[in-house]
Amino acid sequence: MNVRVYRTAGEAARAAASIVADRLDRQPAAVLGLPTGRTSRGIYDELARLHATGAVDFSRARSFNVDEFVGLPPNDRRSFRAFMQKHLFRRINLPKDRIHFLDGHAEDLAGECEEFERRIAEAGGIDLLLLGVGENGHIGFNEPGVALHARSHRARLRLETRRANADLFGGRVSAVPREALTMGVGTLLDARAIVLVATGKAKARAVASLLTGRITTARPASLLQLHHRVEVILDSAAAGKRFPDRTA
Image (cartoon, rainbow, N blue to C red):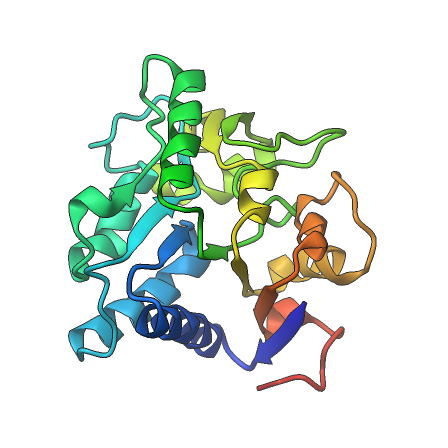
């Protein structure tokens, strides 16, 4: 893993966006894996700004979103699909038919996950995967547990994860779905390159577990140590005291 620490969350977001822009410059038809959440907003703001200046072109790219809540129709304003439309897709030139989501409102959720995996395979796999990390060490919606699913699946969300997503539901934890569809750990690790971004003091413990050298399903992010090409981008708060000399 290559760890880069920036003074602020804004600087970290710009660094992550520059990696995406550079990939698309070198590989215009790149397949991107994209997350949602507070950390991703700054990245998407910067990508939208770069696109507006002509510095990045998404017209030949393809995207697969990492996860989606179960039970929300695609047009629900609280869905991750709506989040992506608001914060990124309506601001760039990525064609609609090249954007892929898990459908948490599908009648057959297991079949939906299988179809999603098939679409990723048909696209040639994910070239660059952006990821965040939960405070409990989850990646995607792969929560800590005694065992983890390799491929896209239906996941039960922990209370702390639902709390972290409550802002999409008017701050009401009780309104946050208890389940989600998510890429599995194997699907994430199949990406050719991974960029994990973490900002804020609340993520410092999860970051520490990612970088300790100990791999455990109790901290799913630690499995990223098995990947050959991971860029970890942090702000100083998320880095804590572990990397005081690596500020970019």
